[in-house]
Image (cartoon, rainbow, N blue to C red; front, side):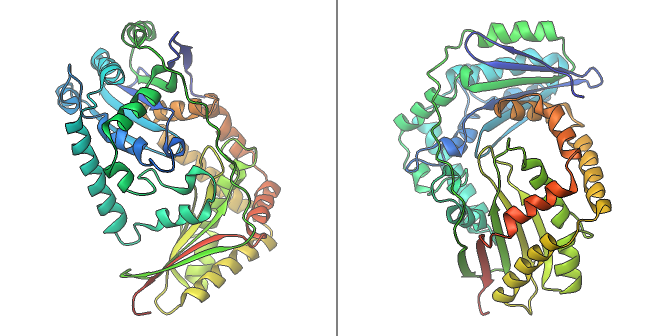
Length: 413
């Protein structure tokens, strides 16, 4: 059981405190409730752009990284479909400076033309390196655009079109900052070795003067079920063929989501998993196979993906994979297998929450979903998932014969 306290400032900033006196460090995690799903379809990539812009400095602190390094700390950030997250870990005595840095860039970020020009060039280079020049790099871009028809999950955080960031005006960028980077659209978690009374007083001193803004109301369309398969075949200089097969899953807070999460691990977590045994060892149709759930706040995806053996064609690979999933639906799930996956989940949870920073991030993520207590209740719910719940989820996903398939085929085949 992870112990924490919550408090909300008058300006809307949500504060979560988790004390751990066993560490000499303290982590500050600031989650802004804005991700790629909040973007205009014609102005995408802005949430991710700000992941970079937030390190551009302020008039009082022109170089954010220089201050962090002088404190003996480390910091970084990441952007998702549902939120943007910033974190900093410092020696415990440097908590006041870490909080001051975060309050400063929430209040007074230097959103200048120079900084915009620099950071959108950085984003463009990242896009080229990660998605264009990387083998299989654009798979997620293609897959999301095919799997979703109405929901903004149809583009990745990097954006639907990199030109949106490249052509962004200073006015558009400042408007995004003024709209979303406000205290009433943020969750602040402090985890580590600190005095809760002193930390709360510091947060009030530094953040309470920052004015809130009208918080945007989300009106996101619900992605409908797929009525038929959707396929895309790409032919490029891939090292080997690869196939991606995605199924729409329930939203993150849906009662059946935890069964879906367990199902993905049963299918392809480790070399003893069902799909590895059937498609890698037995049929040798794939050289490697894996499965994951995106765990998005709205309807997400369960994705099965793998590298196809050189002597197999894409039609065979897709057929073998689909048949394996249908076979799984028709076979009884071994209770030993289910328990093994649950045991592995418990072990991974301990590792994931080993660092105070990881706990701070998880607390913010749960709070962003509207229920901070999920950090304690959801693991218990997952461990209580039954055989019937897993198999019912498998039938819902795989027996409908509706999937999104992206096949990447190497040239010359």
